[in-house]
Length: 395
Image 1 (spheres, one colour):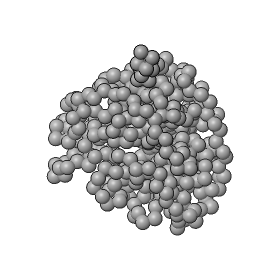
Image 2 (tube, one colour):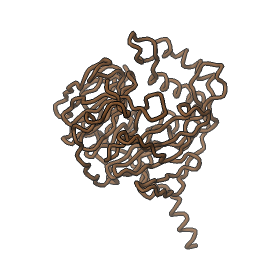
Image 3 (spheres, one colour):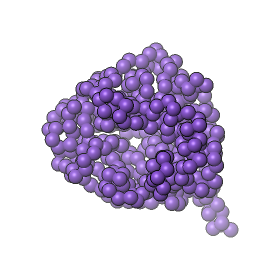
Image 4 (cartoon, one colour):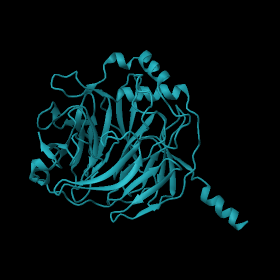
């Protein structure tokens, strides 16, 4: 009986926390928020992929101030997306349209734009983050390595020494088999691993085969957490349509700009008829994976926030996983809200109205979050001091 009770305690999921009403809503309209980065003074950098570009916003004054401008020259970007923290209060911006990265300094100016080129790879890549030694953490898709499987390699790249270290091998998206029919390049809802890095340099890989977390520390030691229960839920036609719509709305196309940059898909490809036709022929898995393909968020206490795969139309829900890989809590967002960023002071979520306009809300951290560690300062001249030929190519 004692053993049975112990087993029940292990498998019993934690109670689901429901996030209360937002502390404040930024009274500014956006079109497609793709990145949010909290600054030390409480303001936030926001990237709007389509209209507003990159701005710094003040929730108290409800104001936004532009950072850089649209274009392909220095201090410019096109289709800005992910904002990643760098040591100190600097920020790395992924510039999808120009296929490069940019560094936003603590003074909220773009100090450097560059193509991230790894030795032996002839295409620029994006990075998930930068550690305290200035090394980039990123993944290399299978197509870049010229193999047709679903293996993705997570590496650490030191631009000063050109050294590339393999940190993990993860299961990426599954390439579709029938390439003769137009469609998404992968099997939708096929299980894949997701990963992120913490402030102290650890890499967390969430394994989709049995839903557990592998933690790799800075010395290369790997520890695995316990399995987390999940529901094997069938994929419906409505699921397929919603996935294809989201993919199309967030995709780019080349050849429509005179300078060769990328641009959003044309309107005809976003019509409901086109989306439904694509969904009907798209290869798909029969059941949902335990979690979505979105990279997990990392809290200020280095807990991992994994977005669970939920029924269509139900609130976004996260599993919050501790450093030992155990499920510490489960949190449900208010209906219609999409959590996009975890700051030291606040959580940030996007709400979209009936006209497709978005606003940013901030919420207090729930009780499960602890205190984060302060980052080291970043030398402002670090990126300027790197010689261009070794992988950071000035534009």
